[in-house]
Amino acid sequence: MIKQSILIVDDHRENLIALEAILEDPSRNLIMASSGNEALQLALKYDISLVLLDVQMPEMDGFEVATLMRNGRKTRNVPIIFVTAISKDSAYVFKGYECGAVDYLFKPIDQQILTAKVELFLEMDMQKRKLQQAVVQMKRLKDENERLLRAMGECVLGTDDKGMITFCNDAAGYLFGQEREALMGQAVDNLLFRDEEQTLRWTFAESPVAANCSSGRSWRSAQPMFVHGSGDVKSVSVSANSVNLPGENFSGVVMVVRDITDQHELSAEQSAREGRRFSRKKMFKEMVLFDRGTGSNIGRLLNISVDGFKLFTRQELQDGTKFQLSVVLPEQIYGVNTLSFNARNVWSEAQDEPGAYHAGFQFVDLSDTNKNIIKALLEKY
Image (cartoon, rainbow, N blue to C red; front, side, top):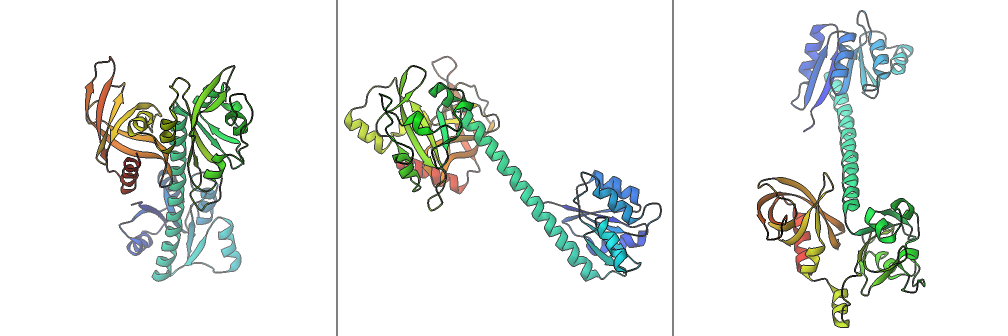
């Protein structure tokens, strides 16, 4: 629970005690100041949600204190309610608003009015704090996802609804033989939708990628596609998912492009089966787990259940170590492309190959949503 701080400023101790008795609450931190200078020092020391400021004080009155707070970077947006026993003349009140007051209370104070106004401004402050926390969380998740995608060994491309590249990782630059920055803004059909003779097979608008993803469905290439890099031709497989959920306006796709040049040609029967679904073994081989904090590769998935999972890793892990992990799903499940969770390493065994280990993990507080995603993954594959 966020505990909000109220700064109460009055040069008469009896007034401070009276306001404290009215406003005391377990969810609040009441901070008392008996002078303007003390109030300014405390406002810089604490994270203040609201100020109740007496106007008539010696040395520095409330108007001066409010003006200085409005000029301070930390305190300029803190709401100030003036408390005064002097004139209610509109010119005098206007001066208070000019100095930064958001409201006025006149002595003798009505307890119900005071309580209602304080609760109103604290509720506004709480909503602002929650919004700020949400923005910070969204930025953190965005940064984590971007680090995750850039760290992937496979090519990842993001496009807008016209097929223009809006995101790509370093592996994309390697695959297409261009700098990653140079790929941004290019048309994906020129890079990916050409046949072995470099003839344009589809435009983005007419491609099965757009046809499926614009309807909220995923798409996977049943036959090899071709990338014409720097002097060579590479065979690739492509899987694509819509950025938007079903029912929302089409806004683009995310494509994972895998180099399959060195693989053996699949038979027609195998190719048809591959177009329908990847085997579980192949799926696990392609699912690499990353540390969300560092973006580093932790290991390749060997098996998984709703209780935990097993990895092939090149790291000797310490039992009991907790990790914040993410993995890119082989296709969109329940509207998500990545699975993020916390897990604890419970065992690690060295393999015959030097520097190779198998490690077992238990999930830590796995959410119901993630459990359902894992169940759906295992049912499908």
